[in-house]
Image (cartoon, rainbow, N blue to C red; front, side):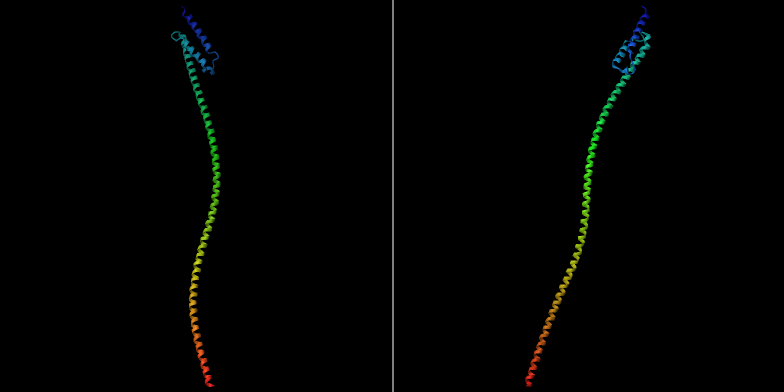
Length: 207
């Protein structure tokens, strides 16, 4: 049996197999699932180097090529998974951002309403404070006026009491003087009567 003829036949078959495997092969199709199956099939069909020594470099190169294909495919799968996760994360983040933005808008509206009410209450408090200060000032003025009136009233009461006492004393003194004048008048009247009687008696005796 001619071993070289058999080897050539095998090499021709492998060459045709590789030609079909490399047809339209480029970087984008390197990870195509159907082509990956072809790569695996070609690898299984390549004889071991100890059977056909001429094939050893081809098989080694093909093994490396398939390994690269597996690595690229796994890497792209990882990229796709990460891209999907990133997309899902971005979608979730955007949704969360929209939710937060809506919450912030609600909070801003609520804060605006509270600040408006606070301003109104502050204005009312300031007005009431002004009224309280005015009322306090009036109360102090009234207290001072009441104290002044109480002082004046006390002074007037003391003056009235003194006047009443003076009037009583004057009344007593006047009564005493009046009684003394009445007594003196009575005495003078009696003395005058006695003189009149004496004069009458003298006239009678003269006639």
